[in-house]
Picture 1 (tube, helix red, strand yellow):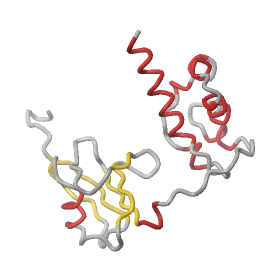
Picture 2 (tube, one colour; picture 1 turned 90 degrees about the horizontal axis):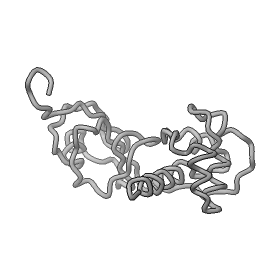
Picture 3 (tube, helix red, strand yellow; picture 1 turned 45 degrees about the horizontal axis):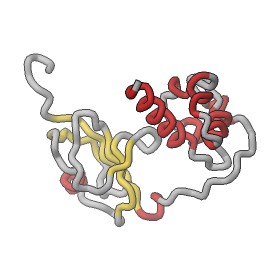
Picture 4 (tube, one colour; picture 1 turned 90 degrees about the vertical axis):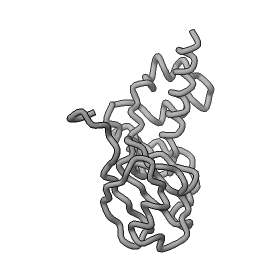
Amino acid sequence: MAEGKPLISRVTTVTGCVKEPDNLLLRIGTSVSDAVENCGGYTKTPGKIFFGGSMTGSCVPNDTVSVTKANNGIVVYDEADAKMPEENPCIRCGRCVYACPVSLNPMAMKQVYELGKLDDMEIKLHVMDCILCGACSYICPARQYLTPVFKDAKDIIAARRASK
């Protein structure tokens, strides 16, 4: 609460396959469909909608979802752009290691995850330090989906810690 007033609206960027991408002052609780209508509607059939951004944002199920105080962007992808490219085997190029802003080893973390060794991920490879920025997944020429693996590992480890 700034100035003694509750947060009731948020500047939100609406972009992607909308007619007129724009920054809108939206009231908390406004649906994605209403925000898109304020931008002239869709240009193509929406395939995926993200809150936040395409690298670190979260995918929402449909356009009836409401804007919250944490949402600063709505990105709408059409059906063609929403398709994920096929993942290929890791070629051990090391680009993910150099791209990591926290100096982790994403290729080793994924390999250890696939072996089911979450304790090693936590203690030796420090997966809990991962900020889930998506840089490793973005830079990977083999199109490895690294960030979702690390999010899953972090969620499992956090649940284990909470149950102790």
